[in-house]
Length: 81
Image (tube, rainbow, N blue to C red; front, side):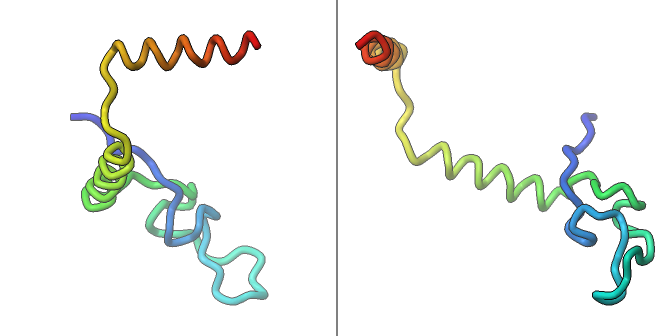
């Protein structure tokens, strides 16, 4: 089983501590990330990230190898000029 990717803790905004009010310099240690500012993603967060990534990939239709080669060749020609 692989470890879940880590994200910046949304409970403490990556600070590692929870501020009780605006005047607190350091508040209580964040229980969600144990004070590190980062925590493993939940299954729901991983699923949402996968859905966003899939939606982003669907914006452009996939290219064939010939199309990729033609695009790379054209970009190379543009760099030369």
